Length: 80
Image (cartoon, rainbow, N blue to C red; front, side, top):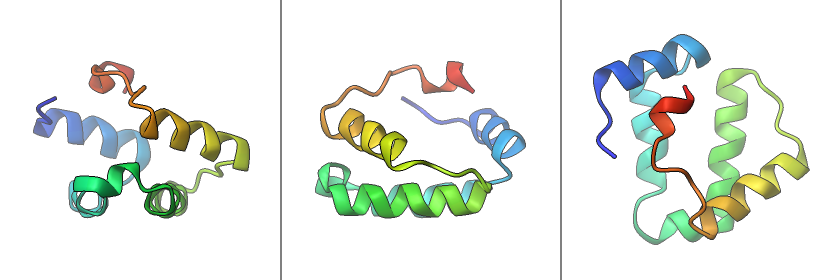
């Protein structure tokens, strides 16, 4: 999926997380880190703190499971 400035603008408007922060988190998930549960949980925690939204242990487990098992939708931009 190609991420455009309009995508980042939508994300920033809804979450108050800017493109620079998003790109920094994305760098942590490059390569094999996308399948590393510890890295994923760290990124989820950082996003939670950045957005001020609490993520329960159950939600975190579901997110990690979805990412590790490649169950992330291709059309994320339509969800925002």
